[in-house]
Length: 404
Ligand code: PMP
Image 1 (cartoon, rainbow, N blue to C red):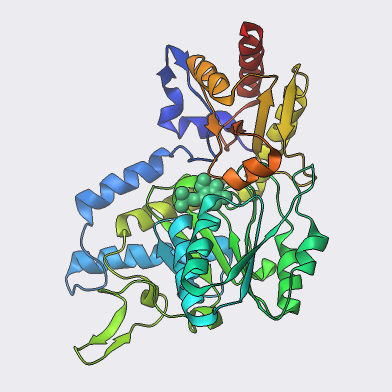
Image 2 (cartoon, rainbow, N blue to C red; image 1 turned 120 degrees about the horizontal axis):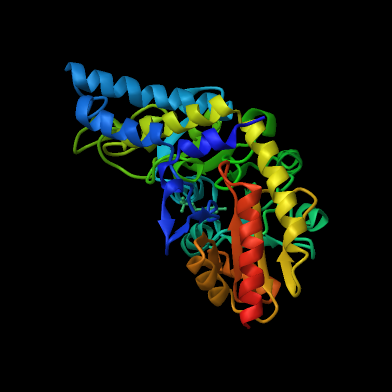
């Protein structure tokens, strides 16, 4: 059992008020709030360990390097990668996917090749592939969904051909909350010799992710969605794949030797990390991951599942409630509309009650088109949310509904 009251004390922002009301933060899908230990680690590093990593013989640089590389180890263990060589630090999920779309595309894709994504992808798992399509003439195949917001697996399986080069799929939808059967999808893709990238932006904060168990070839995540700092993310890649891929950006850190005639590239993971890394951010991310591990990701998953089930049941009692995404396997994200009330009006009025929800297309416009709507209101939960807060959301929605 996790102690929510004590956890809430670790997040100073939860004590604040907005419009004179206690803040209820239900926008965790966009970004999570930050525990004090993570924030303090940033100040502490800038005050006492700051130096550029990897290059210095001096004490501070070595200490900063140890922290930065130690963070890589923490990430490796957190997602159970085989080696720290498989952990590439990026700015976030978006950059991780762009990195792969560029490097994989350069090496393995040519005109007429195909990659598979799904209807429920975030723009960051659509647009980089469209950019690749424009560069290389590849085709993007899109797995449709059923009315519960689940992928149609037969369609997925029917897409494979000798031109299929890669599958890139969200582990958890940021709109529908659907937890996709990525392990099964990866096994199927591997049966055709096709690697899989999993967009883990919405999964890693909410469930145990074991990249070896999934047998994922690539896995992308964002630090800020897992109680860490903004501006740091990860691309996990199997070493055998990363070894075959060309660098994404050129510059310092990613080289072995440079001359005007010929440059040789660094070994993994540095080959993909041009320039000074956000070493303060990576170290702070490790502090967040340690914080999560201490509470227990499985405990967090169980708690959030209970909270989401409670919220689903309560929200369904509201007249005119339409919930988008009722998959059998659902994460802690609930998208909805009530009657004819515009999502923006609902969000704005809830905000006046101190309740932060997200409104709009959630960077998933093709999914909105498939659902035949313009946008939704989205409540997404984190480990510090409570049933009382859900009750306040339900009461708030009822109040807004009566105003219309
Ligand atoms: N994929 C999904 C499923 C997401 O929810 C998000 C963030 N909303 C992203 C990718 C992009 O993450 P970031 O903006 O941190 O790069």
